[in-house]
Length: 243
Ligand code: C5P
Image (tube, rainbow, N blue to C red; front, side, top):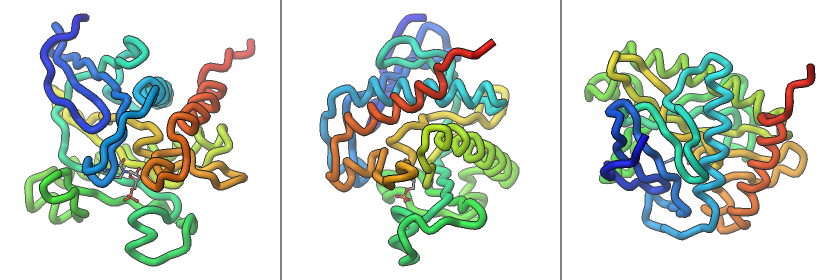
C-alpha cells in the first residue's frame, strides 16, 4: 500500500488516498483543537498516542464482533482504514452527566444514568454542530430511520464493550462520541476514531480526568494523561494469553 493524494486535513487527522481505492491512509496529527477548531495547539506525541490507543480499541471491538473501518496500524502515526462515505452525524453516548449535558440540564457532575443517554449532533462547522433529533435527521435526509436504528444498535454495543475495556483499566467511561460511514456495499460501519479526544474518561478512584478535558480546561498535561491511558490500555489489550 502506498500513500497518495491528500483528501483533507481535519482537526486531529489527515486523510490520504492510497493505490487501493477501498483503502485510506490516516495520519494522526500532533495537534489538539477546542471550541470547534477555534483554538489549535501543537502537542508532542499526541498523534502517536491516539493512533496506538485507537488501533488497540478498534482491534478489540472487531474481536468482539463490532465491525469497524480499521484495517491495520501501518506505523507510529498512520492507520490504514476502509473507505466509507461518512454520515454527517456525531453519535454521543453518555453513562454519566458531564460536559454539555451537565451544563444544559444543570445536574450534578458525574451523576449516573439508569440507562445510557444517546444524542446526535449534525456535523457542520458553519452551524457549530447543532443537536439534532431523530425526526429532524430523517426530515433533512441526513440518514434514514433504518440507518438511525442501526447506528443506535451499534452505539449500544460499542458502549457495552468500551465499558468493559475501560473498567478493566480502573477507568470510568463517562461519555463518548462516535461516527459512522456507509461502505460501498451499503453497510453502516463504525469509522473515525475512538480515543481520549472523543471519550470522557475519569480514574475510578481519584476521578481525575484522563481525556481531552485536561486540554479543554487547561487543567493538566495532555501528553502525560494520554500516555497513562495507553499504558493502562496496553496492559489490558497486549497481555499474553495464559495457556
Ligand atoms: O461536549 P459534550 O458533553 O457534548 O461531549 C460529549 C462527548 O463527545 C465527549 O466525550 C466529547 O469528548 C465528545 N465529543 C467529540 N467531538 C465533538 C463533541 C463532543 O469527540 N465535536
